[in-house]
Image 1: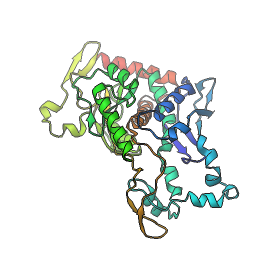
Image 2: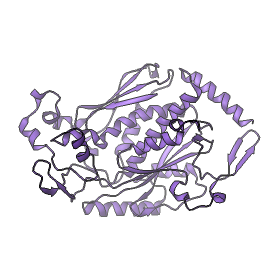
Image 3: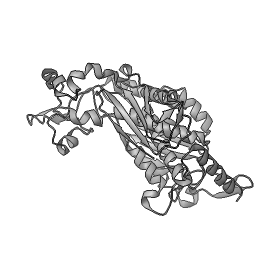
Length: 390
């Protein structure tokens, strides 16, 4: 399976093409809309989230609520397009030269794609870079990833995210987390944090940063339950599941670090305390008393919960911009300011859920094959029976 997206932040719409999706999967666009709404929510989001009310339109590949096996086409319209039509119109005859000049960007923002992209593509107007580099593109990824989520949920898996740190406020680590409680608490929290004491600290720091024209980063965690062992492979670097997951999460704008299981936190732990002892039970198969590996060993799932974290840098568009250089004049200036957020860590977790779900759906179809959900479900059940009775 694969997907492609297209669209600019202030363009007409975002589009998605999904290829290789199996037939026979119940596909309700309301489920995608729910995930798009989650992506827009969260304490610390900016004015753009009050403008857009993302809804998906299904253009192809679905009939009567069931996937056909043919390419799926999705569309998410940008409501703000009406305010940018005379600037972003594809046809030069529809562009207002005066207003387009007013919206021209020549002062690159530190931490953004502006300067590197402008040099790479030889652009004098950095709007030609920032419109596509904008995190607005991740709405299309959430739509595509929700298609993957729908598939893995049909096979008995579940996935959620929660925030473990914003600024210096963080949750207390648990050796044996109660995932049901974490999921419920995160869903009820404005910052997607199940720890109420940490939540209060996170919200306070976001308020302080916003008032100062500053931004905050943090750490989210994605958990997937119900995965069979053996997804991915150890035989080649590009078939290792942990590599694919890390790439998918790292590709999210502002994510600068990824860890699976203990990850960086396990670097100082001796092997005798780090590795998860193997146990077995009749009818249960193999299992572990701990999950420091985060559900992945040797590039493959091992049957334990998949646990992956992403470290999110502070949003680079600042209310009080950092120094930059004007590409038009060569003079030292303050960087450009675009509409932005004070903190996007909870939203990044939602996007990561989508990306992780997409990678896992692909790993499942790679291992079990099948052109239809019915075929895949039968093969998964046969394999799970084998694993449980070893």
